[in-house]
Length: 83
Image 1 (spheres, rainbow, N blue to C red):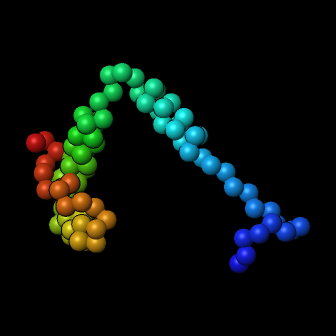
Image 2 (cartoon, rainbow, N blue to C red):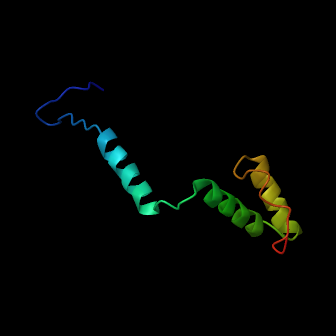
C-alpha cells in the first residue's frame, strides 16, 4: 500500500507527544503532593493477594494454570485474607 495522498485518500499525521506530556502532568497534579506511587502499588498488590487467597481446589487449579500461562504473576495467591 502506497503512503501517498490521492484525491480519495489523504495522509494525516499528528504528533501526540505534547498532548501526552500535558496529560501526564495533569494526572500527577490531580494526584496531589501526598500521592505515594510506591505505597499505592504495595496496596494494589496486597489487594490482589487477598483476592487470590483462600481459593478452593478448583479455583487454585485455574489460578495455577493462569500463572503457568503468564496471565498472572506467581506471587499473588497462596495467602489468606485474614493474614
